[in-house]
Amino acid sequence: MLPVVTRAARSVSRKAAGLAFTTQSPGLDENIMRQAVSSTGALSPQDVAEVLARAKAEAVSASGRSAS
Image 1: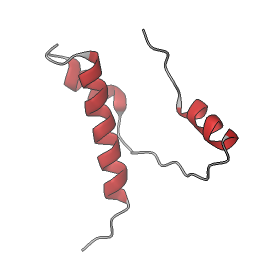
Image 2 (image 1 turned 135 degrees about the horizontal axis):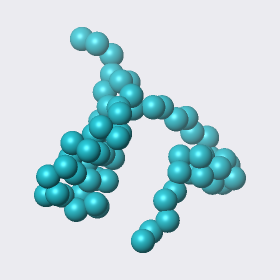
Image 3 (image 1 turned 180 degrees about the horizontal axis):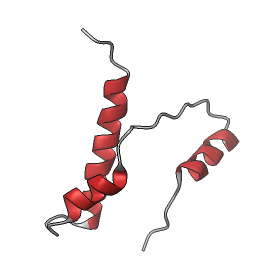
């Protein structure tokens, strides 16, 4: 099993590398999403992780767009 890398650990490593960055919460309930996409057992754990990552990225991306 691969180690879990937390948001805090990623922040520490970026700061140590001298990178400037910001963080933003996607505003999604990851536990509910995980239950919804994995409840049927049709997706592998890797696929569940990809679905969650994509949903979070799209939510953050959409929050930066201005309303038309």
